[in-house]
Structure formats: structure tokens, C-alpha cells
Length: 121
Image 1 (spheres, rainbow, N blue to C red):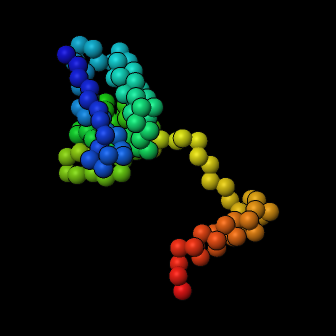
Image 2 (image 1 turned 30 degrees about the vertical axis):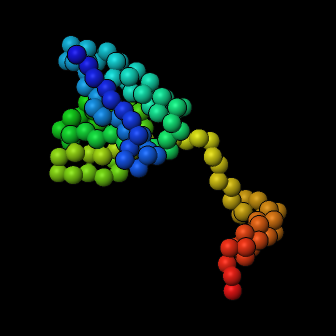
């Protein structure tokens, strides 16, 4: 028997996957990778989560390799577990004024306008 669960984290913004269990008879056949990609895609496309969290026991090296291969990184750990996160890239690009100095005046005006409208002296 295999089992995978997912949902929105307590913050109502981030996604989580828990548990992911694949029966030993079906391990090393690509089932976990496929299941993870399907669940990740569902969380990203349906719920537009900015990140997905998953935890695993430190001694579970197969899980470690799987999650690293899928792009999860360790953001925290306990004595027994690694807490991993996958950051979703929605194609947002941060532009630098160093690379586009011609935008400096327009950006400065925009920021001053919005700052002044929110601050009363």
C-alpha cells in the first residue's frame, strides 16, 4: 500500500506534503517521483502556493535524495528530522536599477508619491 497526502499549511498560504509512503514492493520504480510531481503541480496550479514544505527522518537517505532531486532544500532541522522547502518560481523577475539606470527617475517618483500618500508629517 502507498499513501501521499497534501494540503495548505497552517498559514493558509504554503503547501505541505505529508505523508509520502510507498510500499517496499513498489519502491525504486519512479512512483514516488511521479507522485511528488503530480502533487506539487496540483498545489502550485490549484492553490498558487509560494512554497511547499515536507519533513523526513534524518536516517531516511532515499527520501533525502528524492527531495533534493526535486529541488527541496533544508530550511530547518530537529534532532530527528529535516524540514525541507521547495520555492515556486512563478517567473517573477527582479530588475536592477544598476542594469537599467534610465528607470531611476521614474522609480524615484513612484516611490515618493506612494510614500508621501501614506505618511502625514
